[in-house]
Image (cartoon, rainbow, N blue to C red; front, side, top):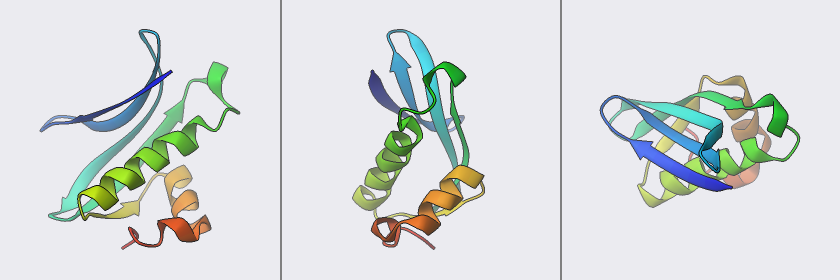
Length: 93
């Protein structure tokens, strides 16, 4: 399993590949210069229950910290994760 990141004018996401198959993604948009909105998380139903959503959010948090960014979350899963854990407090708006 491989975790990848795309950041472009048309698409921003962290995603997981199993071989050539995309099995999960977390997308985001910039809402301000230093703030992103985590707006969608999805894991292929055949791969659920393996903490893959957690891998995606951890990758997003690492990216935020490295780039001195903050996050909001309109995605219910990402919002729950940001609110649940103190380890994410450094990136919350």
